[in-house]
Each structure stands twice: as C-alpha cells, then as structure tokens.
Amino acid sequence: MTRLDAVVAGGGPAGAVAALVLARAGHRVQLLDDGGPGRPVFKIGEFLPPAVRPLLADLGLLDGFLASGHPVSTGTYAAWGSTRLHDRSHLFDPYGHGWHLDRMRFDAFLRDAAVAAGAELRRAVVLARVDGGLVVRERATGALSNPSARWTVDATGRRCVIGRRHGIRRQQDRLVAAYAVFPDGDPEARTLVEAAADGWWYTTLVPAGRLVVYLTDADLVDPSLRTPQGFRAALGRTEHVRRRVAGRGPGATPVPRWAPAHGLRLTPSAGPGWVAAGDAALAFDPLSSQGILMALHTGARAGRAVADCLADERRTAAALADYTAFLDGIATAYRSNHAYAYDQERRWPLSPFWGRRRTATSR
Image (tube, rainbow, N blue to C red; front, top):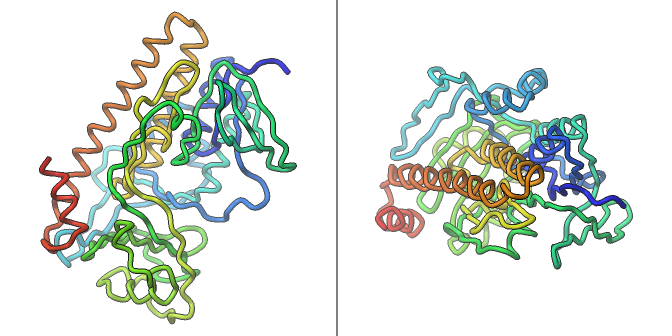
C-alpha cells in the first residue's frame, strides 16, 4: 500500500476540516471515522456562534452550510448572578445570528466536503499510536491494521489517543455533565442558562426534542442524579429550566447520560509527525459556547500546518511553532473569559463548586 501523506484520526468537526484542508492542498489523506451502524442518534455540542461565518466562508463551506437549514439561534436567556432572566441577543452581533446544530447532520456535511475535496473516508477507529505508527480497528469487520503516513492529525477528542503519548494533559477542574433529551417541551428556541447552588443548568432544542443538561463537579454529584427520578427532582428545584419541560411527569424522564465537561489543554500539542486538533488539543467548559467553533478553527490550522510541513520539511519547526502560538492565544483568551464569567455568580459563597472557581480566579 502506498504510504499516505497524512492520516486524520477522528471524523468530527476538527478532523473533517483538517482532512478537507489537506486534500485541497493536493495531499493524499485518509480520514478515519468510527461511524456507520450503531452511531448515536444524538451528540452533545449543539451551538454554533455567529463568528463562524468568516471561517466557513474561507473554507468554501458557508453557502452549503446555510442551505442545510439548521435552526437559527437569536440569542440566549441567562439567570446568572440573580434569579432574573437576562436576554443576550445576537441582534447587534456583527456576524448576525448563530445556529442550533443537528450535530449528526453537521458532522456528516463536513466529512462529505472532505471526501469531495479528495480525502478518503475510512470507517475505523484509532486504538493507539505505537513507534510512530497507528493501530486501527475496522468498524465493519473488527480487523486490525497499521496504516502508514508521514503525518498524523489527532482529532480523537478528549480520548486524545495520539497526543497523550507525547504530551501532558492539564485538566482545568472536575466538571461533568448529566444530560437527558425529552421528546417534547416548551417550543422556545433560545438556549436558557441557569446557575444553581452546586453547578449550573442549560436547556435548548435539538432535533430529538429538548436537551436538558446539569453541570457540576464529579465529586459533588449526588448519586440520585444518576437515576431518572433524581434527575427530575433536581430539575424541579430550578426556577426557569423546569418550565421548559413542564407537563411531563417524572415517569417520562429519560435515564440521564454523563460526559466529561472540564477544560483540558495538551502540552505540547504538536511534534515531529503529529499534531492535535479540537478537544484533543484544547477542550472548553461548555459555558463558553465556543467548543464547535474552536474545533473548526484548530482543525483548519492543524491541516494548514501539516500541509506546510509536507510541502517543505525545512519549514516544519516554524509551522509547528506557529500552530502552538495559535493555540496559546486561544487558551489565554479562554482562561480570561472563563474566570470573568464564573466571577459574575456570587450568590452561594459557601458552595464548594463556586468557591473553587473564585479561588482559581484569584490565582
């Protein structure tokens, strides 16, 4: 088998865009996506902010994205710092409105664009990187293989299959998300965010219904939250979020699912023969609402960095340094914005959840 120029591990937004950029640069690239039968019908991460427009336009994807009909987001409501709901509208945003994503359809749109540009889509998952090579399991057969490539892009999300062998992952805190999708509820389209004594909630519309999410630290989780009854009881103690699912009895509450939600940073995020993008390189607290946007940005920049390295090996050090500086800039802005946002909520001075974040802010 002819050696590939690059293998992109992970078919989410970061990986698909990295493969797109590399294919358009004329490189032979394989995009590994653990898709096909058994893929979940829902994927958390459902908001795309207005600021994505210039990037999608630069990638030649804006018109196709706009034509795909994702529901418009005109802003959010937030009960943060007080019980009163504050309206945060996109009306005055220079880029216009945002979008509520159908993540499964959005991710498929990006992968299709990469394939149209010349990338080869392979239904497989990366298990490990050993001695510079990949260990890959085919989705359909379960067979193992070892594709060979000059460069690898790690877009495996928080699993960070490749990058974790080369760098240190620094975890921001212990934030986790408990979430459930209710088949129906209030049709209000705006996302609603509400702070609580030991964490915070948000709810928004998704194609499958109404998503309700509770975020707290892993060590503060009440065991009852893992049950439908406990999740519904905690939801019932909210002032605003509970109204978005009013009218449904406790017996209709789905079993909540759990996912890590803490910020993460991989250092270094690139080295000879590999780069990390998306959550593998830099993961955000969901409060930022910037996760998908940053996945797209880092995927595009990772693809360009690898393309530069493939075009001229003498540019490798400079290309990786530029990519690292780009990530450093994002991480610095994120830390500042994260600290500011959490510092706005001071109603529970004795709460461990909020106290930890005030302590982090004062460092």
